[in-house]
Length: 77
Image (tube, rainbow, N blue to C red; front, side, top):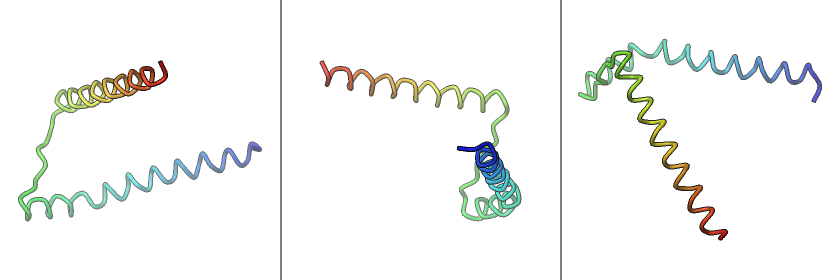
């Protein structure tokens, strides 16, 4: 793949990510109003709580991958 094509893909992906973030940010007030009206409000987490939740998700994912790897090895043995 030539350099120009790789650069184009890089910038296209980057633009897509920024577009998604921008849309989410613009729609956040509307989402908040709808959640409040339907009684499905999100609880706000502080930085430490978000970090702990992310750590828990990562631990769960690692454990799941390990289980799958063990099953795969047992099937081949």
